[in-house]
Length: 282
Image 1 (cartoon, helix red, strand yellow):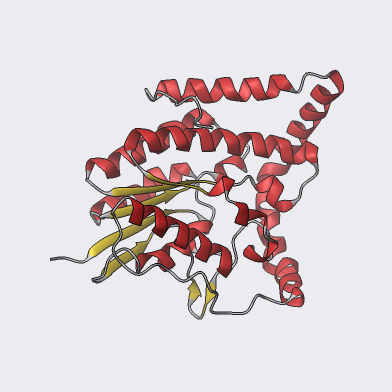
Image 2: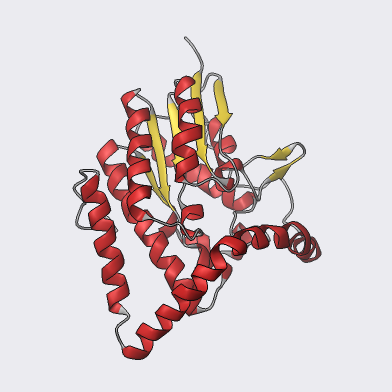
């Protein structure tokens, strides 16, 4: 009998950013891998920091399909919301193709909805609300497509632990070791409930101490500053326009129109990939 094969697709969250080990990053997917089976598990992490749904579809999916995984995780979407090219129709179409490709191979599909980056960063309301609206749109699409393809889906956006600052790294966008462990533990629990995991559950207890405040400040002043700068070059001009639009609607008392517009876009995107959205999918 060949070992269980687990392939992880996605961005920096799945790459393991925020959970450092001696040779780089580890992360929730690596922590989960050992709990999938009692025998050996072959784990391949194809996730790349900064990846969007386009990269997952065009680059990671062909590589993942070639490995013929028994379990595949596809956790992606936040970087799409942080780009001026954000298009929920394109996100839905890409995810539909990725989910279909792996389920047609017979793989168990793992998905998750995620908290919005604006709230995690503590941005002012007029800046945070447009990002939150985008992330809710992505989450609704992921919910609906997960139902369609029978995915093992983690409602990470709704978990109480995400408000615990101790679970997050210095950048406030990526989990720290404890946060990655929480993701691994919760995914493992769902897989056991679905009778798709037979190994020992990952430990929720951290191996390493939480970084000191000085270490966190050092990261923010070096790598963190560069990370923010790379994204602001692309996102900031549009985000400022979105914030201005948000403020205009608030002054006029028409903010509900923005939510209605976003909801209509999600419905149209799901209709385009022939998905029947569940009433409470959001």
